[in-house]
Image (cartoon, rainbow, N blue to C red; front, top):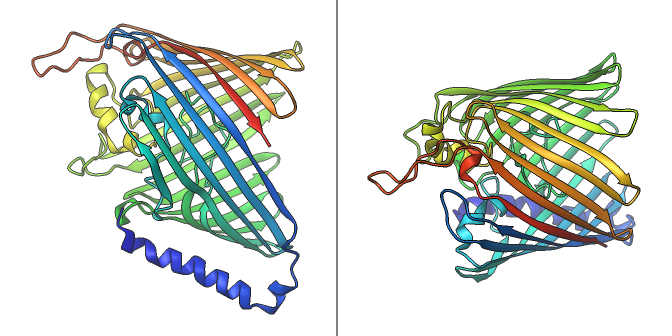
Length: 410
């Protein structure tokens, strides 16, 4: 990270603090009302051998988070959160790097590595440092904050800045990014806004304009701008028909040059999806989505290039292929016990991830989740002359796994 480039945002935060301290009205605000909370989480996973790797593996991902929130006046609020992330593994931890926070959308260096070894890594970071000013119809926020767009639950193409992976085990908290946001609200749920996201380099800055409007009970969404050196524009719609929730989103990108390090696979590509949700009379809920991931490869022989491409390295997508069907049925067995199944099918190579999950509420503040991830499909070819295994399917080359996650909120 180029630390000198982050100085201006530090100055902006410090200047804002001094202005607040010197403002006569700020002295009259009620600074005593502060909300303190957080969580403790431990996700423990046992990974089984696959066609491409031998031997068992185990890792434990542990998070401790504390946050402060305050609203000393009707027009001003702030949020600060510090998180410690401890990753333990009996193998080289690089293979579970996808579960760690990506910082491509962060300009400020606000983390410290307490331990860094082959089998463990301990990082403490500031995940929120944000204040916002609000008027009757306007809001401006500055600092490290959560930035999310889109409405689709499984994979949201409009969620372009810091999206969740569709197979993520924990989506409770969105990782903070360094951003300046301004929003103007109007009508019934209508808004227009602009967002500047400061990346880890100038080439990874994002400049986005967004809009939403509700017409006859249907939400219309739009986004356009430049996402980390890519010109882009997209739209979405969300509504329901006879109890069936329907959503559709589409984004078209001008890709990063393939000569960049890394670059995108294509000069231009779309990412689009259609999602439906329905609750049956017996309580069964079903969520289903068709996803076209234009950033991925059209056949297994291109998966390696897709994994190394800029779109996957930046977290825009975590899928190497192009056409998918995602389904997540869920059912409440008991007021304290529910079950759901996540299924992701690669429609091109016929491989799939199927993950049953059992959620148990231990108390008002504690939750236990048990899960098993089953990956099906043809395994990779034998290593070629360069010593590299070649994919025959996406999920058939991934290890099966199982484990549990324990969460406590305070």
